[in-house]
Structures are given as structure tokens and as C-alpha cells.
Image (cartoon, rainbow, N blue to C red; front, side):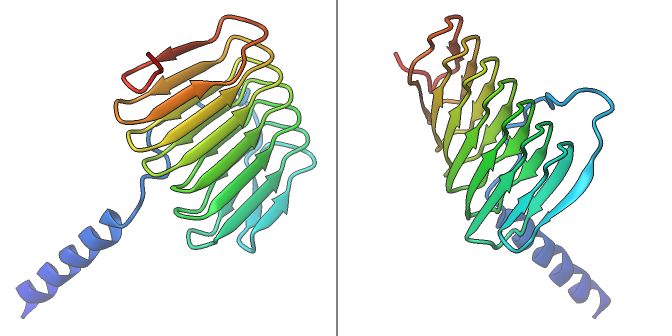
Length: 179
């Protein structure tokens, strides 16, 4: 009986883990400055704000939409697994883990890093430049980089493109890059 219960528990854990859509994959470096506070910001009801910056926003895993307004920048956002997500990072240096749905990051001052998992449709507007968008196989990624020096990392099987790089120095690495 004990072995049967153990097997059921392991099977349940595998199913639960296997249901995740890969939020946080591919990994991206945290662009926030050392010593940035990690103030919790509860986005469990679908929207939250972080006027002083340095927040860690966790959207509920099952939400259909989630939005974060991070006017002072340096926020870390984990979007819902399958819900839409938007991050307004006015002062830049934000880290965003998108879910497997539409995700938009507006990074006015630049320096933001964004991860787009399998199934994600991620758009980054990086007016200040210096942003990174990493795209898993099965995702669609679009970056506008008027400030220049932005980077797309696109696994094979992803669809990636730049819409303008006025400042120059933009590049795309990986099998999902435009030919």
C-alpha cells in the first residue's frame, strides 16, 4: 500500500510539473543593479503597481491577464503560465518572465531582459536600447529598439524579428533569427 501511494505521489508531481508551459525558460540574466530591493508586489488580482521600483511581481499562475506598472524600474515580473501579460517599465532595468500567451514589455529607458517561453508571443519596445529578448522554440518574438544595441537570442523553431534599430548595433543569435 505504501509503495502504491508513493508511486501515485510521484506520478502526481510529474503531471503537475509537466503541465507548466516553461515560464522562466529560456533563462536570462537579471539586469537589475546590485542591491536592488525585492519588495513583494501582489499581482494576484491581475494588476499591480510599483511606483518606487525594485519590486518582485508574481502574477497568479491561472490569471487570464496581468499587468505591472513599474515607473521607477528595476522590477522582476513572473507572468501567468497561460495568461496575457504587460509590463510598463518606465525607468528600465526590468526582468520579465513571460508566459505562453501575448506578452508586452515597454522599456522606456532601456536595459530590460525578457524571457519568452514556448507558445509565447512576446513584444518588447526598448526605446532606451540595450535590451535582451530570449525566445524559446515555438515562440514568436518582436523587438523594437530605437535606442540601439539590443539583442535577440532565438532558438531554432522560434520566429524572431527586429522592427527598427535606429541606434544601430542590434543583433540576433540562433536558429530562429531571420535569414
